[in-house]
Image (cartoon, rainbow, N blue to C red; front, side, top):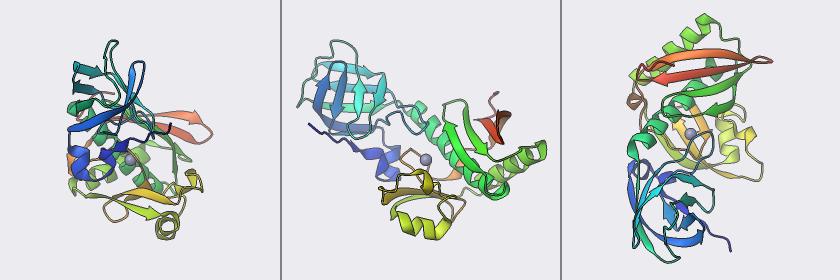
Length: 247
Ligand SMILES: [Zn+2]
């Protein structure tokens, strides 16, 4: 049986910022339950999942892990006793989610700025964390001056509080507007024609993404500590914190 979970956080910024929802259980597989809709972000795209709890006919159940794409699986304790058809109310851990939203949006901003500042440098990997995140850039040298330039551009964009927007576009429209490399659309299988596009400002960064983002850059604040290390062959790993945290 093919089950698809409606992922509410994809639909608008209002939905991204909401923390509770009602849903029905559509499948149970041991500790994992699938819901017809969810606000829990499943681990993917370099971003860890949301955690939280589900309140249902068998009590309050901690959600410790979330995965899957079409059918989103919520990991519950043993003896959760939920059954297909049960109604539940879900609540996500907002502090963790918001930290991921800020860090993930910071990654978009860094990627867009690095492309412009460093002659078309590509983002070839990323890992988001609540306290520390990183992205891999190629080809870059990332001298001290370049790191300072990237930081200055980041903080300038944040201080302008540039808004983010999301909409669905077709592949060719995106390529015509910003190019296949700058948008990273060349990393997405050619069979995917319609994509959810996340845009910072006018064109600071424009790329397809199914993650969670803040409404405007002011919510991120200035870049904290950064650390650069070589990953070989012109690739540099750029790690960063927010809120002045040590790295
Ligand atoms: Zn994103």
